[in-house]
Length: 137
Ligand code: RTP
Ligand code: MG
Image (cartoon, rainbow, N blue to C red; front, side, top):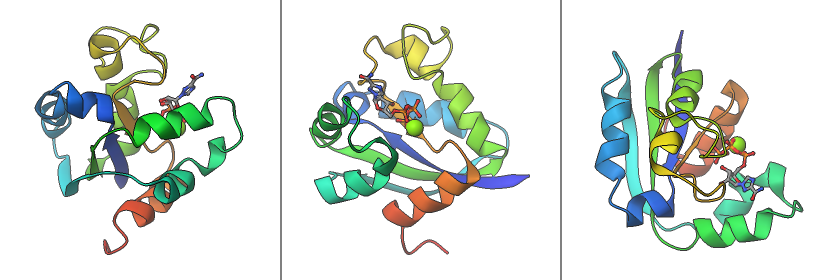
C-alpha cells in the first residue's frame, strides 16, 4: 500500500544539527523516497491550519511559539505504509516514554520539543500535504 505522509523536522532538530541524522533514518527504509523537501520558517497562519485540531488547548500557544522559533524542514515521504512507518520511527509524543532506537527516544526529553512531526492518518496526510506543498499533484 503506497502512501504519502507529511513530515516536519521541528526547530529543535534543525538547531541541534539533527537534519541529516533524522533524514538518513527515513531514507534508509526500503523503497521509501522523499518526493518534496524544503527548509522554511512557519508563520502563525500556516501553523493554525496545520494544528487546527489543537487550537484552544493549553499547549497550543507555546507550541505555535516554538514551531515559529526557527526554520523547520518540511518534506513529503512516499512509500509502503509510510504513514504508520514514520510514526513508528518517531516514537510516542513524550520523548521520555519513547523507546531508545526511535528518533524521539534517542534525542528528546521535552514533550513540546520532540523533534519531528508526522501525519497520523491518510486524511491528515492529504490535508497537511496541501498546506505545505499545494503544488504537489
Ligand atoms: P505531531 O502532531 O507533532 O506529529 O505529534 P503527535 O501527533 O505525537 O502529538 P499531538 O498530540 O498531535 O501534539 C502535537 C504536538 O504538540 C506538542 N505537545 N505539547 N502537553 C504538552 O505540552 C504537549 N502536548 C503535545 C508536541 O510537540 C506534539 O508533538
Ligand atoms: Mg499530531
